[in-house]
Image 1 (tube, rainbow, N blue to C red):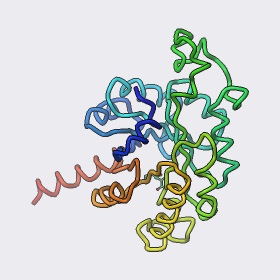
Image 2 (image 1 turned 120 degrees about the vertical axis):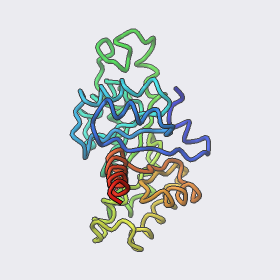
Image 3 (image 1 turned 90 degrees about the horizontal axis):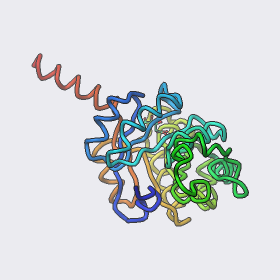
Length: 251
Ligand SMILES: O=C(O)C(=O)C[C@H](O)[C@@H](O)CO
């Protein structure tokens, strides 16, 4: 599969779906719907490396790029997610260029970084059967950092410009909380901040992504130049569909 960072550079906005159910079966269904990417959430969903492995195995033969969000900017967890085979990672809560550089270093083998080596037992390396995996591993990786705080907003340009950061994702929910508008990502001040972040990211020459608030907002984000947009979540589809069905049945 083409590395996600190269797909982001193609200029066509890539639409994704958040996978929060932590379930192989639902992931297998979502992988067949036509989304460009699926985000497997290790931060806010009951996922472990083991559960994520099952979801990755369920989807990787289908089209969408599997993206994993690590629970934190932790080199130990980043190593585990890479070793089970994720090639695209989303690192949450990155506030400074130094934190962004640390995230990149966690994805690189020495001398560029600190990723631990286990090619013979690593699924990503084909359990030792992928020729030259260690030498070529970084070529296929996409490192996406998430900016979602007031501090990150002030450092957005430097974060985006950090070498090895392939894209920057804006988290409107946490950004709203950080700006004093908890639960109101659509607040004008939050949306202004999102626009500032987008300008800084694009100014640094990097693709920007965002979690959209509605199908209409998804379309707007695509028109505004976002390279990848999360259009919703698996849980949201289940809740919305279930409520709509019951309303229709009961009239
Ligand atoms: O801050 C945000 O918004 C995000 O990072 C996305 C949420 O974490 C995701 O769970 C969708 O609500």
